[in-house]
Image (cartoon, rainbow, N blue to C red; front, side):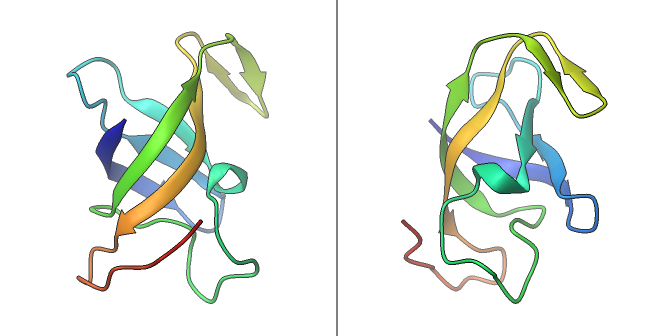
Length: 88
């Protein structure tokens, strides 16, 4: 799926993606972002365009309880600053 990052807290390492089909926002953790590590900038920024899969197993990740799954295998397609990154 392709969508946009709604918000991401680089300090805490998590955020949410807008659901591409208008459903609930999708939880994303920094560990789900594919690419070179360590990165000099936060894994994601609000407005970045990403491609991702959804892990549909409900449960708990840290202190966040999710019911409808979370993002996995996140690839940045286009950074908000307009620079395309080849991250894979």
